[in-house]
Every structure is written in C-alpha cells, then in structure tokens.
Length: 458
Image: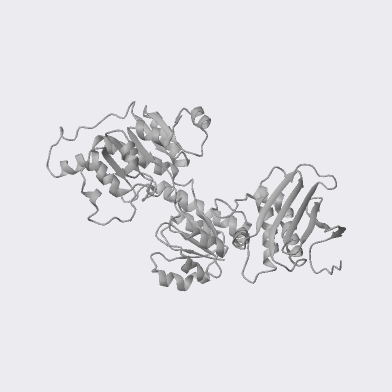
C-alpha cells in the first residue's frame, strides 16, 4: 500500500510507516493542482494543518482509504465529503495535549508579567520598570471554557499555581468536576467571576464567534483572555474594541481567524496583546508524539483493520473487533441477502439484538448490515464509513433495540426492512465462536451458511 505524507512529519513517524512495509512518499508544499494529480495513487494521506483535504481533492482520490492528521484540529478537512467518499478521517488527540496546555500557561504568565514587552524594550535600550508592572496570579480566578484533554491539564497546572479554577463545559457533569476540585459554572457566571479566561473548545458552528461583544460586556473589568485553541472562536473585532476600551486588560493569542493574520491586523497594533504564530503544539516532544501516533494508527487500520481515533467512524480496538468480527460478518451477509429479497424502495430498517454481546457497542455490527444491504443495490462504493450516511441521505430510518434475553440462541440478530410495499425479516446467529448461520426468513425457519451461492425459493 502507498502512503503520501503531504506536510512536515517527524522522522519517527516516517520510519514506522516504512518499517511496516508501506511505500511512503514525502512530498510537502505541493500546490493543490499537483496534489490532485497524484492523490489517486495512494491508499493513505498523512497531513498536518497545511494540506487542505477538500471535496475536489477527494474526487481525485480513487484509492484513498484513510486521512490521518498528526495533531488534533481538522479544520482543513472536509469531513462530510470524506465520509461520503468512504474515507476514514483520524486525528491524534493525545499527542500534543501537554504541550498545548503548557503553552496556555506560558502565555498567561507572559501576559501577566509583561515579559514580551519587557524583552522588546530592553533590547531597544529602554528601561521601563514602572510602566511594565504586572500582577500575581496566586489566588486569582481562572475560567476555563472546555474541560477536554487540554482544558483539564491546564486546570491541574493552574491549581498548582494556587489559582481558583472555575469551568464551563456543558458536557462534563458538575459532580465530576467537583470530585477533581474544580467549580462548575454557567458561561455567564464564568464571565462575571474570572480574572483570566482561557479557551479550550473546537471551532464549530456552536463556538464560532463565541466570545463576541455581548460576552465581553459580561466580563469583569480588567479580565485577561488567552486563546491557544482555534482562531475564530473569539470575535477579533469585538476583542480589539474591548481592549481599547480597557474592559480587557490584555490578551494572549496563539491562533487567529486567518493565519497568518494580515500585517495591518488591528490587534497586532495594541501594546497589551501578545501573540505567537500557532505554536501551541510546536515542541520537539509533541511533534514526535503525533508523528508516532498517526503512523501507528495507519498501521493498525491499513494492516489490521483496527480503527483508532476516527472522527467519522466507530473506533474499534483489536480486542473488540476479535469478539465482534463473527457478528460483523454475519450482519454484512444478512444485509446482502435481504437486499435480494426486496425490490422496492426502503423506508426503514430495524435491528433487534437478543443475547449477551459482551457489553460492547454494536454500532460496527449495525453498520455492517447497512453496508451489506446497500452494497447490493447501489453502483457507488459503499463501505463501513459512508454506509450510515448514505442511508440517511436516502431517507431510510434506522432503529435498534436489544435485550439480554434470548430463548432459542445464545445470540440472535433479527433485521426487519420495511419497503413501500411490505416488510422483509431475516434472523441470524453464530454457533460456537465463528460459525455464522441464517436461521429465519420471514415466517420460515431455515439454516443457511451465508457464503457462496445459494438458491432460495419461497
């Protein structure tokens, strides 16, 4: 298999891919038209933030199976287009967590003690000791927006600095935060109480422009704002106005809505702004970590079919896959058989699981059935990534139910497909550890090995 690395990647990652037997090409800085002309030769694409994986690029990627981002952010990947194409999109969320969190703390300290300004004036031969008086952060309140991997590390570092930490995260339960020694607050409460606000959420439709004029008006006078997450979460015009008005005493930005920002960007003209060129993940350790992580994920996926850190497909470990593999095979074959038993438009499908399926998430099994069902009926390639999305686009309603009880078999999968003219039912089970069987079609009890060619007359 061939893998293209189109952005700079740590040598450790390149080495892992080559030692795994992949044909690896490192071609960085390619213009889009040149990348389009060669992408059709590759099974995998490793990127960072420079390469734009657009719908147009994917249209040329006939062999592409996986895109791997050495890092967290996927702003440069058209994930819906990749999903429709059946391409798995992965990132490496753990590789640069500590590095980015440390950068946020460094930016907060630098902002508080005017370190960049002090350095610049000293090098200019100016002694401005009184003008650059700073603050202490001890006993100050740090408001953290987003308590994911990075936000939680920032919280632990801030607590070590004797800060009071308050957190806004609509997903994390308040009792979980309290157990860790932090206070859960609403967003408005965070704005009202925080001396410092640091952002650790992804950029999406819900967070774009999140810190706008109205948000700044709710903040304490003299608040300081740090953003090492993603550009665009802060309304930069509103921030500039708030800083000029004195509402915001200072801001530290590692990211901008447009990168690099234009030279005449109004924020860059303010003395109380410090900025870095998206350095949050830029340490030797982090670059090695994400390179190794994305390379190992490619090996697991392309050689062992293990999906790790995918954002558009269920992540399935080797252990889970080993347990579910017979049921995934059975469901795929059931879908293929059921597709041949119906001829009308599919309105809905229901999958009933009876028995103990080891407590695992059965999404891969359901996906396998949908894939088998649609593959027989469609000329376009259907795989385990795009099958649920194709079904949704076709207006097919998909439901599941499960019960640990199974009167006849240890495990039983029953699928009911409703069409515009009727319904079709098929049930299957697995004997021993891997012996798949179709055991029912509509009202008929049968026993069919789901492989090869079968002639069924009902």
